[in-house]
Image (cartoon, rainbow, N blue to C red; front, top):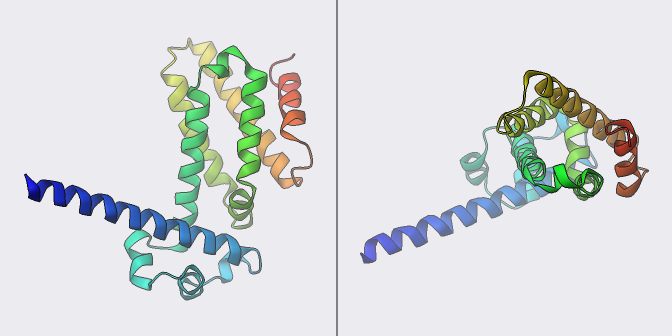
Length: 184
């Protein structure tokens, strides 16, 4: 029994160490992209800036693009949780507000993804995640098309907001979505 407990503790501490390593690498990449184009950043620069060893980098990622995709996955999971929330159906304006507030809190990461020319990959992944949520709702064929149109419109609005410098507040963006998407 004692060996099982030790293995669980070791596994948990390894998982925590890997999580911290990934965070350090992601933060370093965000900081590097602020001063240098993504395609000019090397793995050597990334490990030096992050303070992790090359072996630790390769234990967690194969390429710097994998770092970006990992960040994208985290954002995607947050969106998935957000869409799954009942407030999405009960109070869409407040849901939009929360979504744009969450997007704003990830401005650095999203700017990185944009500067690395990843919007197409991001939108495909987010649409796929959103589509999984809508599949669980047992929608009619027409409702599925409507959900797809809503997803595309929302992704387009978010990307435009990011590309335009996020000048509007989350409140203003929520009002805009209510007007444009919900006809309210």
